[in-house]
Amino acid sequence: MTERPPQRTPNRQLAALIAEAGFSNAGLARRVDQLGLEHGLDLRYDKTSVTRWLRGQQPRGTTPALIAEVFTRRLGRRLTAQDLGLDACAPVYAGLEFAAGPEEAVDIVSGLWRKDSGSHAELRKIAFTPAGLVVPSRDWLIGRADDRVARGDPPPVNGARVPAQGRAAVPRQRQTDRGPGQRVTMGDIAALRSVGELFRTLDHAYGGGHARQALVRYLEHETEPMLRGTYGEATGRRLFAAAADLTRLAGWTSFDIAAHGLAQRYFVQALRLAQAAGDRPYGSYVLVTMSRQAIHLGHGREAVQLARVAQQGLGSAAPAVVQALLHSVEARGHGVLGEVRACTASLVRAERAMEAARPGDELPHWARFFDEAQLADEFAHCHRDLQQYRAAAQHAERSLQLRAPGYARSRLFCRVVLATARLGLGELDQACSLGAEAAQQATEMRSARALEYVRDFEKRLEPYRDATAVRTYRDRVAALG
Image 1 (tube, rainbow, N blue to C red):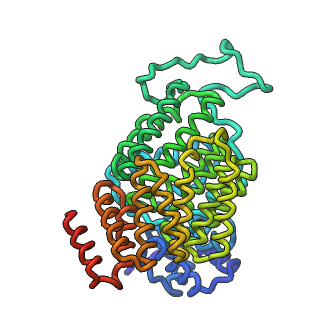
Image 2: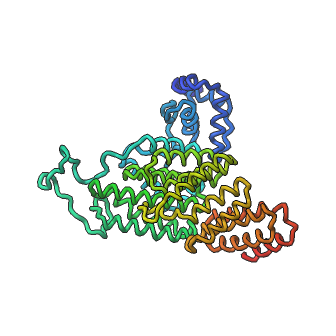
Image 3: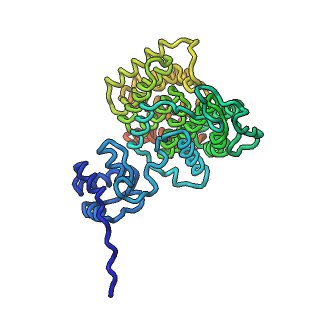
């Protein structure tokens, strides 16, 4: 006698949520397919697929996480695959979680470092997802610094430390011992800061791909053991701040090699580490970095929202230069959207804030790069995006005059913006000459963004492809190999 297949249990949890969300079976399938496309997945589910899920069939792969995200967006509360009666799987949003506490934050970010330092090439292929920006930015905005980050020492009793004789002594390890439990010192944190400056300098001059893997290995082998070591509250806050800075930099270098989904995950984890550090201003800077990535990828609305969350979270007490930075990045988002009035208003606010700055103002280390050259660069990009080419050329020229040689990649970007402006003004010879200089510089650094700037300029040359200047440009670029 032939055995009958086992009876599946109807999925009542999923059915209840479908009813609450007001979805039809076809509507749910369509939304899952659309979300899959955001991640580069061609799923092709239909109403019959949803009927099977309701009967108890378990979808495979990352689909349960996608279905959960569809309901999360619709209902406005975080739902997991298990909440829908579906089997858990490797979530699509792994690495984009905003941890509940510092220990969980360390677990998530260290797992990211370990995977990235290995031969996990698929990490670099993860797609950027605009939906993954919503929860972390919201949680940062409404959240506050963790009550306690210290490790290895007991918490204060009625505001006082427990006397040393009343607890087991923690043996001090040699500084060469990087195992868990090491006592973290201010010298360790100073070393983290120095390493950050070194990698930042390399990134500015040679591109994110030059030493990115070395930075990730440093995070795995040096920073993680410190985070799992022994430290008090004050040292712990400084340690989390330094780790946040290095993690943001790892994301920035990932962004520069076009590993956009990976970069997004680094930025989210840097934001969470900044919250553990109690460093609200640095969290705003991480959000600005996330906004810049959204701008580069053409997600102007998300870029504007991130910049505004950064402004709201920091308030009006921020130094004038920091306010100028936040307003200029919001302007870039409006520029991508072609919103002339909003872009102009943000640029005016940025300019006024910069004018209010004083030479003696104390600035956080991460804001010191934002000077007149950088502000002119932001203006040039905005005017280019709004097709206001004369203003774009003026600001780009000013930025190039003021920008230090060490910022080679930024100078390259600005040179391409100037070339685009010259092209828009009908000055084809100058445009091609500037573009050829930028193309040569792009071959000398490991930066996918630099190559993308050059390719964008070349697309704009297409209507003039038969002109002598354009043919000369192509010959010069071809000779670069």
